[in-house]
Image: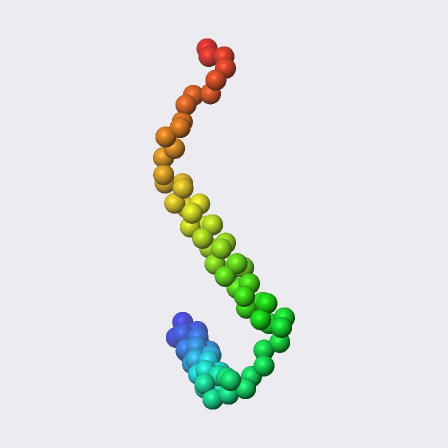
Length: 79
């Protein structure tokens, strides 16, 4: 169990270091970087692709707990 924890800590530390290097590059050369048009489109679609489905899931979960005030017995033949 400790070996897995150490492995995850090593992976996390490496990712954190890589992110820090990326931020450093953006800070130092951000104004000289040219982002391709397709990547700009993909970046602008980020809210639609990621956040909108999350909102739909949250709204669905909330609507499960709100009672429907319109519940009537179905029309038709009653026995």
